[in-house]
Image 1: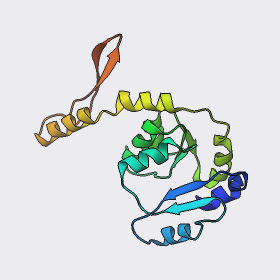
Image 2 (image 1 turned 45 degrees about the horizontal axis):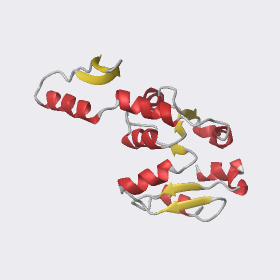
Image 3 (image 1 turned 30 degrees about the horizontal axis):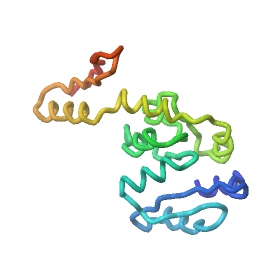
Image 4 (image 1 turned 60 degrees about the vertical axis):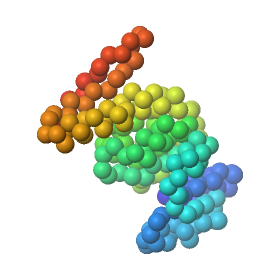
Length: 174
């Protein structure tokens, strides 16, 4: 991703790509750290402080989500709740979670996507509304508790409807 950012030329126009570092020195992390301070790329230490991450995400031009496995990713939801724009790898998980509110990219052509996102309007209100509507932690926790009690999850999201609360049932089988 750092190489693609360099290829895009955005670093030469004043844009920066900030990576929040990795906990362990994997071969990928070591290649990434080699870009630090060059071509508009900054690699920071790993940071799990929710307040710091919220400030970084809320003040970025665009958040890039590079995870393509595993279902609903909490970092993606957090970014949707705070970022003005979001790019995510085009995969079934990102498509389902974003629901058209963010920009999907092909990892093989991410350099072009970096340039394309410059023309993208802010999607913060739509992303925030989607997170509030479909990803309510209390409803998720209740569904998991029902599963732990050997009962159907019966995940129900509370959706505001003309000033009243209506249940939107999302069937989740055990």
